[in-house]
Image (cartoon, rainbow, N blue to C red; front, side, top):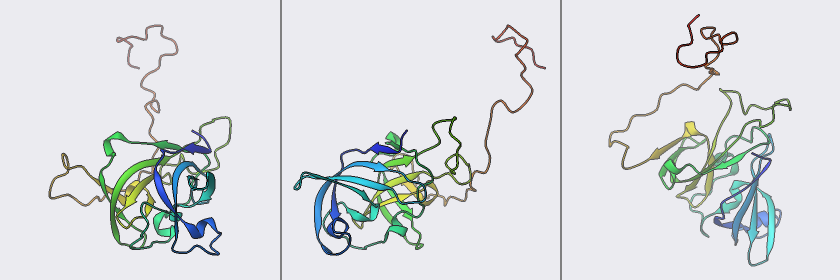
Length: 211
């Protein structure tokens, strides 16, 4: 887990205006390959991309700078594609095999549901107990995962679990329920009760007495 993580080498198209500080290049695209991603608390994720035709790396672009082909059909701004900024400085790229390639629905900030395909997830926590945690990455009711979804409108989205549904034809029934879950607000522990007291007992096997 680190501040900068390598990404799967996914081919993308970079909107050229992001390569020109939004001064020119609007409506144009440059082929690229994702290289890495950075997490800075309170900012959007920063993607680094290799641009083969220039032999160049271009860094610090938000998810709104990218498309998976050269024609965005329903252009959405950054605050719709990534509704929450990074919670901390330590992230990891997780490719969840169970969700690989599944169709996904995303309930976006503008209250419109958009369809896409699950790619991978960005998630994080505080990795070093010697460093005070000034973030919310380990707070149950604030922590968020960021699922990377390849949207049908040709953009990419970074959305938390509570705004995504994933559809596996082998498991999902035709009449699906609408989730009505409440957010987790508790930290769970298997050692928060005084039932098992082993400090004065050398028998750590199956006949430890209950006190």
